[in-house]
Image 1 (cartoon, chains in turn blue, red):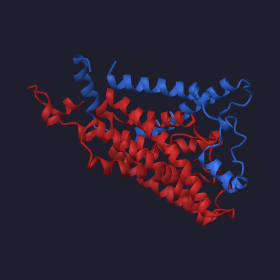
Image 2 (image 1 turned 60 degrees about the vertical axis):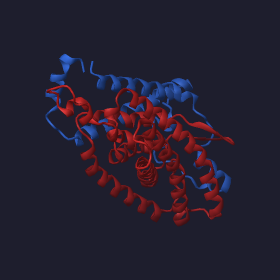
Image 3 (image 1 turned 135 degrees about the horizontal axis):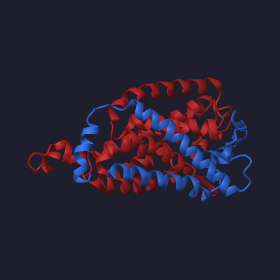
Image 4 (image 1 turned 90 degrees about the vertical axis):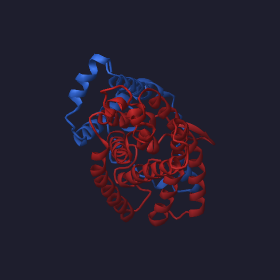
Amino acid sequence: MSRRRGLWLAGLLVTLVVAGFVSSYASSSPDGLEWAAGETGFADTARDSATADSPLADYAVSGVDDGRLSGGLAGVAGVAVTLVLAGGLTLALRRRTGRSAQDAAAARPAGD
Amino acid sequence: MHVPDGFLDAPTSVATGVVAAGTVALALRGARRELDERTAPLAGLTAAFVFAVQMVNFPVGAGTSGHLIGGALTAVLVGPWTAVLCTTVVLVVQAVLFADGGITALGTNVTLMGLVAVGVGYGVSRLLLSVLPRTRGGLLAAAGAGAFVSVPAAALVFVALFAAGGVADVPLGAVAAAMGGVHVLIGIGEAVITVAVLAAVLSVRPDLVHGAAHLHRPADLATRPGLRAEEVVR
């Protein structure tokens, strides 16, 4: 396995663990903006998002009662969607040097 | 930091939408220069990683929390224009699927986190890189400082937008003090996470880190006969 792919797979694993598991330990306190809005008195001007009824709204899968499972599944779904969109965009924009395949072939015997 | 619908009036939201659209259009051009066959897959993963880490709000005291924005981290990892695109994708996914950040506030959020946090985070890092030692430690210090400054910078730009088009009549000085104060604390967390992640990537693949290009000295390393410099840095 190339070291580049090794980094990518390790990064993906860490990303999935953070979104699917570590996220259940996130602080539920209001974030800085919500807190400041509450302190200074404009929090009540916030309106519900047009997507508030989304099946994934507020990082929970509707219909899954277990909070930890629901949040974890929502996180993994978000990672998957973000990876497809951002990965697709960056792959589409990349410079195609045409050298990559040759380099990979040349590097393989040396155990890159 | 995700601005909900309703905090800013329609003209301000439209204006930030225009700024955000212009920024993304420039980034689509700029990112072509940053992305190649080797770095493009890493950029996609970086966006997914930022999405994941943004789910993990950390406490900052006084019953408040914050999460990574990732502007400096992403810019140093994959380049500033690509960082704008990665941040924008994360914000769109959060707004559309997770109701985190309003839909009419999407332009505001892209402006604050995709333009200001990335721009300030990368700008401060580059400025410090020009005076700090050209070492891994110097890069980490520069990125950490850029990350720290980027968070209160984005918070204060929100205050400026609120001054222009906030729907509530509240004292601006109090909003600036509250936003600035809590986001200085969140900025410390931003810096810690940025340095930790960057150090980890630099320890395994420094050649894939956009901001570490100045650490490579292919001419000095190319000692094996017949080996091209571009193969050495790989």
